[in-house]
Image (cartoon, rainbow, N blue to C red):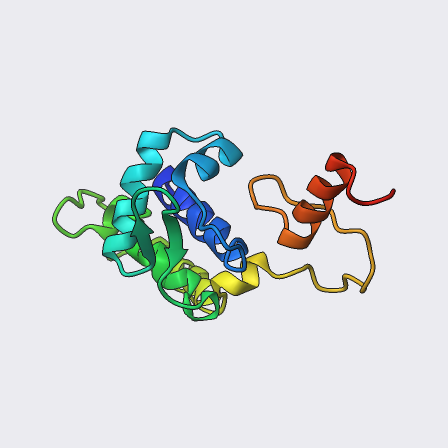
Length: 171
C-alpha cells in the first residue's frame, strides 16, 4: 500500500510538532513548509484537517503556531492513517458496489490482501508519534547526533550554535 501525499504530509506536520514540543515558540506552517519543500497553502489545508481531528491546536497572530493537542505518546499512527487516507480499496473486489471481477468468490487474492492490510494497520497501531521522533535505539549518550532533515534541531544545540556565532561562547 502506498500512502497518499495528504497522509504523508499530515504525518510530517505531526512529527515536526512533536519534535518541537519543548520549544518556547510553536512550530509554524511556513517553517514546516520550508523544511519539507511543501506548498504552504497545501499544508494550511492539512493543518486545518488535523485541527478538526483534534490533533493540533492552532493559534493565529504573532507568537502563534501549531502545537499538539494530545501528548505525542498518545497519538497512534494507525489511527492517523485511518483518518487521513481516503481509500483502502487495494483491488476492485474490495468495493462490492463497483466490483466487476469475474473471479470474485473463486480466488483467494481478496482474502490475502485483506489480511495484509489488517496486519499493516496492526503494526501502525503499535507505533505512536513519540516513537517516530525518539532518538534511534542504540544511540549512546554523548554520541554525535545526525539530525534528520525536516525535523527541528533540539533547542540546546540551536541556542549554543547561535551563541557561538555571536561570539558569546569559546570554541
